[in-house]
Amino acid sequence: MKANLNLGSVFGIKIIVHWTFFFLILWIVFSELKRGGNSESIFFNIVLVLAVFGCVVLHELGHALAAKRFGIGTKKIVLLPIGGMASLERIPESPKQEFLVTLAGPLVNILIVVILYFIVPVDEFVRLNFTETFEILMSFTIQNFLFYLFLVNLGLVIFNFIPAFPMDGGRILRALLAIKLAPVKATQIASSIGQFIAILFLFTGMLYNPFLIIIALFVFLGAHGENQIIQHMALLKGHTVDEAMMINITTFKPEDSIDLVVNKIISGTETNFLVLEDHKIKGILYHKDIIDKSNENVLVKDVMKTKFETVKDTDSLHKIYHIIFVENKTFVPVLSKEKVVGVIDATNLNEYILLQARLVF
Ligand SMILES: [Zn+2]
Image 1 (cartoon, rainbow, N blue to C red):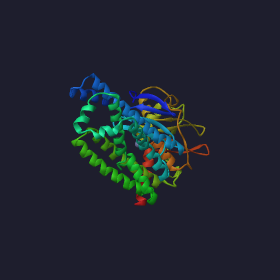
Image 2 (image 1 turned 30 degrees about the vertical axis):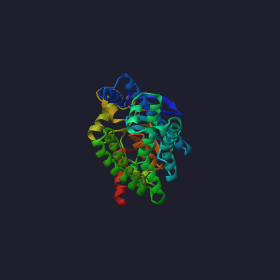
Image 3 (image 1 turned 120 degrees about the vertical axis):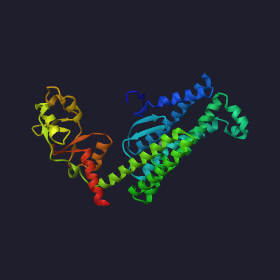
Image 4 (image 1 turned 180 degrees about the vertical axis):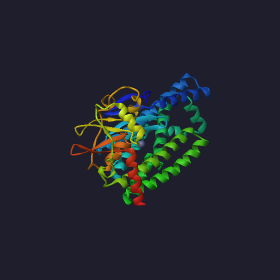
Protein backbone atom coordinates (compact mmCIF):
# COMPACT_ATOMS: atom_id res chain seq x y z
CA MET A 1 0.00 0.00 0.00
CA LYS A 2 2.91 2.34 0.78
CA ALA A 3 4.13 2.23 -2.82
CA ASN A 4 1.02 4.06 -4.05
CA LEU A 5 1.79 7.49 -5.42
CA ASN A 6 -0.16 10.39 -3.91
CA LEU A 7 -0.60 13.13 -6.51
CA GLY A 8 -2.18 15.58 -4.05
CA SER A 9 -5.74 16.81 -3.67
CA VAL A 10 -8.29 18.46 -5.95
CA PHE A 11 -11.43 19.88 -4.28
CA GLY A 12 -10.29 18.06 -1.12
CA ILE A 13 -10.24 14.70 -2.93
CA LYS A 14 -7.01 12.75 -2.82
CA ILE A 15 -5.74 11.57 -6.21
CA ILE A 16 -3.78 8.36 -5.80
CA VAL A 17 -1.92 6.31 -8.40
CA HIS A 18 -2.06 2.62 -7.48
CA TRP A 19 1.34 0.91 -7.55
CA THR A 20 0.20 -1.53 -10.26
CA PHE A 21 -0.09 1.47 -12.59
CA PHE A 22 3.69 1.37 -13.09
CA PHE A 23 3.33 -2.06 -14.72
CA LEU A 24 1.24 -0.36 -17.39
CA ILE A 25 4.13 2.01 -18.15
CA LEU A 26 6.56 -0.93 -18.18
CA TRP A 27 4.20 -2.85 -20.44
CA ILE A 28 4.11 0.10 -22.90
CA VAL A 29 7.91 0.30 -22.96
CA PHE A 30 8.26 -3.44 -23.54
CA SER A 31 5.58 -3.70 -26.19
CA GLU A 32 7.06 -0.69 -28.02
CA LEU A 33 10.53 -2.26 -27.93
CA LYS A 34 9.07 -5.54 -29.17
CA ARG A 35 7.47 -3.73 -32.08
CA GLY A 36 10.82 -2.20 -32.93
CA GLY A 37 9.92 1.23 -31.57
CA ASN A 38 12.49 3.89 -30.65
CA SER A 39 12.78 6.33 -27.77
CA GLU A 40 10.53 8.77 -29.65
CA SER A 41 7.68 6.25 -30.01
CA ILE A 42 8.06 5.13 -26.40
CA PHE A 43 7.92 8.74 -25.21
CA PHE A 44 4.89 9.46 -27.44
CA ASN A 45 2.97 6.47 -26.12
CA ILE A 46 3.78 7.09 -22.46
CA VAL A 47 2.70 10.74 -22.70
CA LEU A 48 -0.45 9.61 -24.52
CA VAL A 49 -1.30 7.13 -21.75
CA LEU A 50 -0.66 9.79 -19.10
CA ALA A 51 -2.96 12.17 -20.99
CA VAL A 52 -5.62 9.46 -21.21
CA PHE A 53 -5.41 8.96 -17.47
CA GLY A 54 -5.63 12.73 -17.05
CA CYS A 55 -8.98 12.42 -18.82
CA VAL A 56 -9.88 9.51 -16.54
CA VAL A 57 -9.22 11.73 -13.50
CA LEU A 58 -11.49 14.40 -15.00
CA HIS A 59 -14.15 11.70 -15.58
CA GLU A 60 -13.93 10.64 -11.92
CA LEU A 61 -14.01 14.28 -10.78
CA GLY A 62 -17.22 14.57 -12.81
CA HIS A 63 -18.75 11.85 -10.63
CA ALA A 64 -17.31 13.38 -7.45
CA LEU A 65 -18.53 16.92 -8.11
CA ALA A 66 -22.01 15.71 -9.07
CA ALA A 67 -22.09 13.65 -5.86
CA LYS A 68 -21.03 16.72 -3.89
CA ARG A 69 -24.13 18.54 -5.11
CA PHE A 70 -26.17 15.89 -3.30
CA GLY A 71 -24.08 16.18 -0.14
CA ILE A 72 -22.04 13.03 -0.79
CA GLY A 73 -18.31 13.44 -0.23
CA THR A 74 -15.56 11.58 -2.09
CA LYS A 75 -12.61 10.26 -0.11
CA LYS A 76 -10.24 9.53 -2.95
CA ILE A 77 -9.79 8.80 -6.61
CA VAL A 78 -7.54 5.82 -7.32
CA LEU A 79 -5.97 5.24 -10.72
CA LEU A 80 -5.50 1.61 -11.72
CA PRO A 81 -4.08 0.29 -15.02
CA ILE A 82 -7.66 -0.56 -16.07
CA GLY A 83 -9.15 2.83 -15.17
CA GLY A 84 -10.11 5.11 -12.31
CA MET A 85 -12.24 4.62 -9.22
CA ALA A 86 -13.84 7.36 -7.15
CA SER A 87 -14.66 6.17 -3.63
CA LEU A 88 -17.88 7.95 -2.69
CA GLU A 89 -18.74 8.04 0.99
CA ARG A 90 -22.06 6.42 0.22
CA ILE A 91 -24.14 5.30 -2.73
CA PRO A 92 -26.68 7.97 -3.75
CA GLU A 93 -30.07 7.26 -2.19
CA SER A 94 -32.55 8.05 -4.91
CA PRO A 95 -32.42 6.61 -8.48
CA LYS A 96 -32.45 10.17 -9.83
CA GLN A 97 -29.34 11.07 -7.83
CA GLU A 98 -27.54 7.90 -8.89
CA PHE A 99 -28.48 8.59 -12.51
CA LEU A 100 -27.04 12.12 -12.43
CA VAL A 101 -23.91 11.23 -10.44
CA THR A 102 -23.17 8.38 -12.85
CA LEU A 103 -23.92 10.34 -16.00
CA ALA A 104 -21.57 13.16 -14.93
CA GLY A 105 -18.51 10.92 -15.55
CA PRO A 106 -19.06 10.03 -19.23
CA LEU A 107 -20.38 13.59 -19.83
CA VAL A 108 -16.86 14.85 -19.09
CA ASN A 109 -15.47 12.57 -21.82
CA ILE A 110 -18.21 13.72 -24.22
CA LEU A 111 -17.16 17.31 -23.47
CA ILE A 112 -13.50 16.43 -24.18
CA VAL A 113 -14.54 14.74 -27.45
CA VAL A 114 -16.48 17.83 -28.52
CA ILE A 115 -13.60 20.19 -27.66
CA LEU A 116 -11.05 18.00 -29.48
CA TYR A 117 -13.40 17.74 -32.45
CA PHE A 118 -13.01 21.48 -32.95
CA ILE A 119 -9.23 21.41 -32.46
CA VAL A 120 -8.32 18.33 -34.51
CA PRO A 121 -9.39 18.21 -38.18
CA VAL A 122 -11.27 14.94 -37.58
CA ASP A 123 -13.16 15.25 -40.88
CA GLU A 124 -9.89 15.28 -42.81
CA PHE A 125 -8.74 12.09 -41.10
CA VAL A 126 -12.03 10.43 -41.92
CA ARG A 127 -11.91 11.49 -45.57
CA LEU A 128 -8.50 9.86 -46.15
CA ASN A 129 -8.28 6.25 -47.24
CA PHE A 130 -6.86 3.59 -44.93
CA THR A 131 -3.25 3.68 -46.18
CA GLU A 132 -3.11 7.47 -46.13
CA THR A 133 -4.50 7.63 -42.59
CA PHE A 134 -2.08 4.94 -41.49
CA GLU A 135 0.87 6.85 -42.96
CA ILE A 136 -0.11 10.14 -41.35
CA LEU A 137 -0.73 8.55 -37.97
CA MET A 138 2.74 6.96 -38.01
CA SER A 139 4.40 10.31 -37.25
CA PHE A 140 4.54 11.65 -33.72
CA THR A 141 2.94 15.06 -34.14
CA ILE A 142 0.80 17.01 -31.71
CA GLN A 143 -2.09 16.76 -34.16
CA ASN A 144 -1.87 12.95 -34.17
CA PHE A 145 -1.56 12.97 -30.40
CA LEU A 146 -4.80 14.94 -30.06
CA PHE A 147 -6.51 12.73 -32.65
CA TYR A 148 -5.62 9.63 -30.60
CA LEU A 149 -6.88 11.38 -27.47
CA PHE A 150 -10.11 12.15 -29.35
CA LEU A 151 -10.49 8.46 -30.31
CA VAL A 152 -9.70 7.19 -26.81
CA ASN A 153 -12.25 9.53 -25.21
CA LEU A 154 -14.84 8.48 -27.77
CA GLY A 155 -13.99 4.87 -26.91
CA LEU A 156 -14.31 5.64 -23.18
CA VAL A 157 -17.78 7.10 -23.73
CA ILE A 158 -18.94 4.00 -25.64
CA PHE A 159 -17.27 1.59 -23.20
CA ASN A 160 -18.73 3.38 -20.17
CA PHE A 161 -22.24 3.10 -21.55
CA ILE A 162 -22.05 -0.71 -21.77
CA PRO A 163 -24.64 -1.72 -19.13
CA ALA A 164 -22.20 -3.86 -17.13
CA PHE A 165 -23.09 -3.00 -13.53
CA PRO A 166 -21.21 -1.69 -11.51
CA MET A 167 -19.68 0.12 -14.50
CA ASP A 168 -21.31 3.48 -15.34
CA GLY A 169 -23.70 2.07 -17.95
CA GLY A 170 -24.89 -0.56 -15.48
CA ARG A 171 -25.50 2.06 -12.79
CA ILE A 172 -27.52 4.12 -15.23
CA LEU A 173 -29.50 0.97 -16.08
CA ARG A 174 -30.14 0.29 -12.39
CA ALA A 175 -31.25 3.87 -11.80
CA LEU A 176 -33.68 3.62 -14.73
CA LEU A 177 -35.00 0.26 -13.53
CA ALA A 178 -35.42 1.66 -10.02
CA ILE A 179 -37.93 4.23 -11.27
CA LYS A 180 -40.43 1.41 -11.72
CA LEU A 181 -39.01 -1.37 -9.50
CA ALA A 182 -37.89 -1.68 -5.87
CA PRO A 183 -34.16 -0.90 -5.45
CA VAL A 184 -33.44 -4.51 -4.43
CA LYS A 185 -35.08 -5.88 -7.59
CA ALA A 186 -33.45 -3.24 -9.81
CA THR A 187 -30.00 -4.09 -8.40
CA GLN A 188 -30.63 -7.81 -8.83
CA ILE A 189 -31.49 -7.40 -12.51
CA ALA A 190 -28.67 -4.92 -13.20
CA SER A 191 -26.05 -7.11 -11.52
CA SER A 192 -27.24 -10.24 -13.36
CA ILE A 193 -26.88 -8.41 -16.66
CA GLY A 194 -23.50 -7.09 -15.43
CA GLN A 195 -22.27 -10.59 -14.65
CA PHE A 196 -23.46 -11.88 -18.03
CA ILE A 197 -21.56 -9.10 -19.82
CA ALA A 198 -18.53 -9.81 -17.62
CA ILE A 199 -18.48 -13.36 -18.99
CA LEU A 200 -18.60 -11.96 -22.54
CA PHE A 201 -15.70 -9.63 -21.59
CA LEU A 202 -13.81 -12.64 -20.28
CA PHE A 203 -14.09 -14.60 -23.55
CA THR A 204 -13.35 -11.53 -25.70
CA GLY A 205 -10.41 -10.74 -23.43
CA MET A 206 -8.97 -14.24 -23.72
CA LEU A 207 -9.01 -13.88 -27.50
CA TYR A 208 -7.92 -10.26 -27.94
CA ASN A 209 -6.98 -8.22 -24.91
CA PRO A 210 -5.73 -9.30 -21.46
CA PHE A 211 -6.95 -6.02 -19.90
CA LEU A 212 -10.50 -7.03 -20.65
CA ILE A 213 -10.01 -10.18 -18.53
CA ILE A 214 -9.14 -8.04 -15.51
CA ILE A 215 -12.10 -5.74 -16.18
CA ALA A 216 -14.33 -8.83 -16.48
CA LEU A 217 -13.17 -9.96 -13.04
CA PHE A 218 -13.79 -6.51 -11.53
CA VAL A 219 -17.27 -6.30 -13.01
CA PHE A 220 -18.18 -9.86 -11.99
CA LEU A 221 -17.05 -9.48 -8.37
CA GLY A 222 -18.25 -5.87 -8.17
CA ALA A 223 -21.74 -6.83 -9.35
CA HIS A 224 -21.85 -9.66 -6.84
CA GLY A 225 -20.59 -7.49 -3.97
CA GLU A 226 -22.87 -4.53 -4.57
CA ASN A 227 -25.88 -6.75 -5.11
CA GLN A 228 -25.11 -8.38 -1.76
CA ILE A 229 -24.79 -5.01 0.00
CA ILE A 230 -28.16 -3.86 -1.37
CA GLN A 231 -29.85 -7.13 -0.35
CA HIS A 232 -28.32 -6.82 3.13
CA MET A 233 -29.36 -3.19 3.46
CA ALA A 234 -32.93 -4.18 2.62
CA LEU A 235 -32.86 -6.90 5.29
CA LEU A 236 -31.47 -4.52 7.92
CA LYS A 237 -33.89 -1.70 7.17
CA GLY A 238 -35.81 -0.59 10.25
CA HIS A 239 -33.69 -2.68 12.64
CA THR A 240 -31.51 -1.24 15.37
CA VAL A 241 -28.16 -2.14 16.92
CA ASP A 242 -29.64 -3.57 20.15
CA GLU A 243 -31.28 -6.37 18.14
CA ALA A 244 -27.98 -7.68 16.79
CA MET A 245 -25.39 -6.84 19.47
CA MET A 246 -23.63 -9.32 21.76
CA ILE A 247 -24.37 -8.83 25.43
CA ASN A 248 -22.52 -11.72 27.07
CA ILE A 249 -19.03 -10.34 26.80
CA THR A 250 -15.91 -10.54 28.93
CA THR A 251 -14.37 -7.23 29.94
CA PHE A 252 -11.04 -6.36 31.55
CA LYS A 253 -9.64 -3.56 33.66
CA PRO A 254 -6.66 -1.40 32.58
CA GLU A 255 -4.52 -2.79 35.45
CA ASP A 256 -5.18 -6.46 34.59
CA SER A 257 -2.23 -8.50 33.39
CA ILE A 258 -2.21 -9.50 29.70
CA ASP A 259 -1.82 -13.17 30.78
CA LEU A 260 -5.38 -13.05 32.02
CA VAL A 261 -6.57 -12.00 28.56
CA VAL A 262 -4.45 -14.65 26.80
CA ASN A 263 -5.99 -17.33 29.05
CA LYS A 264 -9.46 -16.08 28.15
CA ILE A 265 -8.68 -16.32 24.42
CA ILE A 266 -7.43 -19.90 24.83
CA SER A 267 -10.33 -21.05 27.00
CA GLY A 268 -13.14 -19.29 25.10
CA THR A 269 -14.24 -18.09 21.67
CA GLU A 270 -13.96 -14.32 22.19
CA THR A 271 -11.03 -12.66 20.44
CA ASN A 272 -11.44 -8.91 21.08
CA PHE A 273 -12.28 -7.35 24.45
CA LEU A 274 -13.48 -4.13 26.03
CA VAL A 275 -11.46 -2.49 28.78
CA LEU A 276 -13.70 -0.84 31.38
CA GLU A 277 -13.18 1.25 34.48
CA ASP A 278 -16.11 2.56 36.54
CA HIS A 279 -18.49 1.43 33.75
CA LYS A 280 -16.62 3.65 31.27
CA ILE A 281 -14.73 2.33 28.23
CA LYS A 282 -11.02 2.99 28.50
CA GLY A 283 -9.95 1.07 25.43
CA ILE A 284 -10.24 -1.97 23.19
CA LEU A 285 -8.00 -5.02 23.18
CA TYR A 286 -7.65 -6.34 19.64
CA HIS A 287 -6.75 -9.95 18.99
CA LYS A 288 -3.64 -9.15 16.96
CA ASP A 289 -2.22 -6.79 19.61
CA ILE A 290 -2.89 -9.33 22.37
CA ILE A 291 -1.05 -12.07 20.45
CA ASP A 292 1.86 -9.71 19.65
CA LYS A 293 2.33 -8.85 23.32
CA SER A 294 1.40 -12.26 24.77
CA ASN A 295 4.99 -13.13 25.71
CA GLU A 296 5.71 -9.83 27.39
CA ASN A 297 5.06 -8.97 30.99
CA VAL A 298 2.67 -6.09 30.32
CA LEU A 299 -0.67 -4.81 31.55
CA VAL A 300 -3.91 -4.45 29.60
CA LYS A 301 -3.51 -0.65 29.50
CA ASP A 302 -0.19 -1.03 27.62
CA VAL A 303 -1.80 -3.12 24.89
CA MET A 304 -5.25 -1.55 24.47
CA LYS A 305 -6.11 0.92 21.72
CA THR A 306 -7.61 4.11 23.11
CA LYS A 307 -8.95 5.48 19.82
CA PHE A 308 -12.18 3.80 18.78
CA GLU A 309 -15.66 4.44 17.48
CA THR A 310 -18.84 3.71 19.47
CA VAL A 311 -22.49 3.39 18.43
CA LYS A 312 -25.76 3.80 20.33
CA ASP A 313 -28.12 0.88 20.92
CA THR A 314 -30.82 2.84 19.10
CA ASP A 315 -28.68 3.46 15.99
CA SER A 316 -29.81 1.82 12.78
CA LEU A 317 -28.11 -1.36 11.61
CA HIS A 318 -27.55 0.43 8.28
CA LYS A 319 -25.11 2.72 10.06
CA ILE A 320 -23.24 -0.11 11.74
CA TYR A 321 -23.12 -2.09 8.47
CA HIS A 322 -21.23 0.82 6.95
CA ILE A 323 -18.89 1.15 9.94
CA ILE A 324 -18.05 -2.57 9.98
CA PHE A 325 -17.92 -3.47 6.29
CA VAL A 326 -16.89 -0.20 4.66
CA GLU A 327 -14.77 1.50 7.32
CA ASN A 328 -13.53 -1.95 8.43
CA LYS A 329 -13.93 -1.39 12.18
CA THR A 330 -13.83 -4.93 13.52
CA PHE A 331 -15.24 -4.47 16.99
CA VAL A 332 -17.59 -1.65 17.99
CA PRO A 333 -18.81 -0.96 21.57
CA VAL A 334 -22.52 -0.19 21.96
CA LEU A 335 -23.59 2.50 24.44
CA SER A 336 -26.94 3.33 25.98
CA LYS A 337 -27.07 6.64 27.83
CA GLU A 338 -23.25 6.68 27.98
CA LYS A 339 -23.15 3.19 29.55
CA VAL A 340 -21.76 0.12 27.81
CA VAL A 341 -24.52 -2.36 27.01
CA GLY A 342 -22.83 -4.60 24.46
CA VAL A 343 -20.60 -4.96 21.45
CA ILE A 344 -21.16 -5.55 17.77
CA ASP A 345 -18.74 -7.06 15.25
CA ALA A 346 -18.71 -8.47 11.71
CA THR A 347 -19.39 -12.05 12.79
CA ASN A 348 -22.53 -11.30 14.74
CA LEU A 349 -23.80 -8.79 12.20
CA ASN A 350 -23.39 -11.51 9.53
CA GLU A 351 -25.23 -13.98 11.73
CA TYR A 352 -28.05 -11.49 12.16
CA ILE A 353 -28.22 -10.99 8.37
CA LEU A 354 -28.37 -14.76 7.84
CA LEU A 355 -31.22 -15.06 10.33
CA GLN A 356 -33.13 -12.19 8.71
CA ALA A 357 -32.58 -13.70 5.27
CA ARG A 358 -34.14 -16.97 6.49
CA LEU A 359 -37.14 -15.06 7.70
CA VAL A 360 -37.63 -13.33 4.37
CA PHE A 361 -37.11 -16.09 1.80
ZN1 LIG B 1 -17.39 6.53 -14.36
